Length: 149
Image 1 (cartoon, one colour):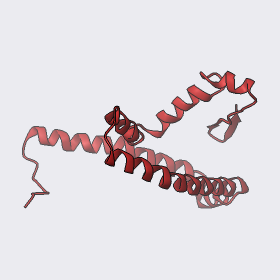
Image 2 (image 1 turned 90 degrees about the vertical axis):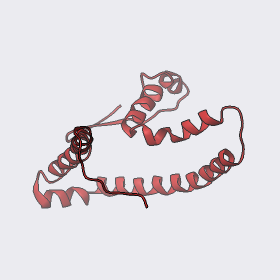
Image 3 (image 1 turned 180 degrees about the vertical axis):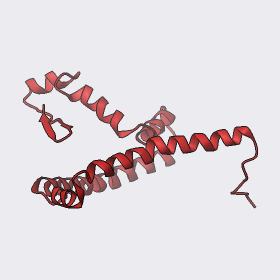
Image 4 (image 1 turned 60 degrees about the horizontal axis):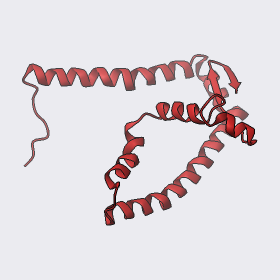
C-alpha cells in the first residue's frame, strides 16, 4: 500500500511545505483577493449592476459562443492528434508531443503576449496583415477605461 500522508520531519521537507504555501499565496490567494476586492469596490449593488450591464452580458455571450466553438473543434482535432501520436511513431514524435503539452506549461498571459508580438500592430506580421486589409482587434483594459488599438 502506498503511503499518501507523511509527517514533515526534516528541514528540507519543511522547506517544500513553506515554499508551496508561498507559491499558493502569490499565485492563487493574492490574485483572487485582488479580483474580489476590485469586483466589490462599489459594494454588492455596484457588482450586480456591472455584471448585468449590456456590455457584460454581451461579453458573457461571446465567451460562451467561443467556448462552444473551440470545444467542438478541440474534440475533433484533439481526438485525431491523440490517435496519431499514440498509434504511430514518426520523426519528430517527441517534439510534437512537447508542443502539444506546451499550453499546459506556459501561462495564458505569456501566450497572449507572444501572439500580440506576432500579430499586433507593431508585431512581426502586423504590418503585413494591415496591408492585406486584415485587422486584429486588441483591447487593452486599464482600470475603468478601455483602449482599442
